[in-house]
Image (cartoon, rainbow, N blue to C red; front, side, top):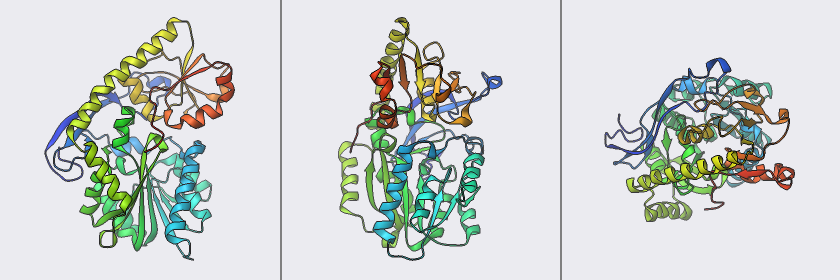
Length: 401
C-alpha cells in the first residue's frame, strides 16, 4: 500500500483494533453470524503525517444503501444552519445569484438551509434512501458518487461547495479533489467539515475509527492534500459537533491567504506533536484503559441486577462494542430513533435494536453510544434523569478547543 495522500510507501502501524465487520452493516436476524469482517488498522505516513486505514472496504458496499440520516438529530441540523448562515454572511450575502453544491448531501438537511438563504442548490449523494428522501422534499439531489467525471457532467461552477463529514470517506480521494477544483467558481469557497484527529486522540474517541473513515485529518495534513490539487486553506475553526470537528475554508491556491487563526491552529498542532507517530502510539495505549473501565462498569451494573440498554446505534458505536467485546450479555438492546433500522441487529456484537417509542419501560442504565450528542440527550431525557435512570458516557468529549 502507498499513502492515500502523498503516494509514499513509508507507512508504519499506529493503532490496531483487530478484525471487525463494516460498522454500518446492520443485520437482519437471518444475517446474524454471517457478516464479513475486515482488518481495522490505522497506519501513519512518515512522509506527510496522514493517519489512514490500510484496508479499503469498497465504497459501493458501504454507501449504496446507507441508512444514516443527518436530519434525525436537531443538534446536527442546527449546526448545519449555523454554518450556512456564516458562509453566506461572510462571503455571499450581497450576491443576487449564487449556487451551492453539497457533496455527500445525505437527506438534504444542509441543502435546505442554503436554499433558505437564496442559493440554487444541488446535492450529490450515492445512498438510495437519503437521496430519495431529499428529492421527495424538493431538494434536488443527483444519486451518484462525486468525482472528477461527475464534475465534468455537471458542467457548471458553484460559489460554495460543501463537504460535511465526507472527506475522510473518500476511496477516490484525488479524483474527488480534482472534481471540486474544477467545479469551484474562481472566487468560490470550499467548506470542509471533518472530524479533527487531534481532538479524537485527546478525547480517546477511538470509536470514530471505522471502515467508512479511510483518512484521519489534522489541519496540516489536509492542507498537504489540497495543495496537491491547486487548492489551499485560508481559514479554519474548531466546532464541538461530533465531539470535535474542524470547519475549514479553502479556495484556489492562488487566492488563498492564510488567516491568523489558521496559522495558530497549525502552530498548536506542531507544538503538541499531533502529527507525529508518538502521538498515535500514546493514543493506542489509552484505548486499552478505556476498555477496562467500561467493561468493569457494565459487569458491576449487571451483577447488581440492573437492566442496561445502549442509547443510540451510531456507526461508531459498533466500533466500540466490537473493540470492547460487548454483547447482549452486558447490553440487552440498542435504543434507536431511526425507523429504517426497526428489527435490525448490530454487526459483530449481535445486540438487537429497538425503537425508542416502542420501549415498554426504560432501563436502569443507558450506556450512551451517541455520546457526541450528550447535551441534547440529557436535555431530551431530563425526566428519566430525574427518575434515577443512569446515563453512562464511555467517551466524554471536551466541550471547547
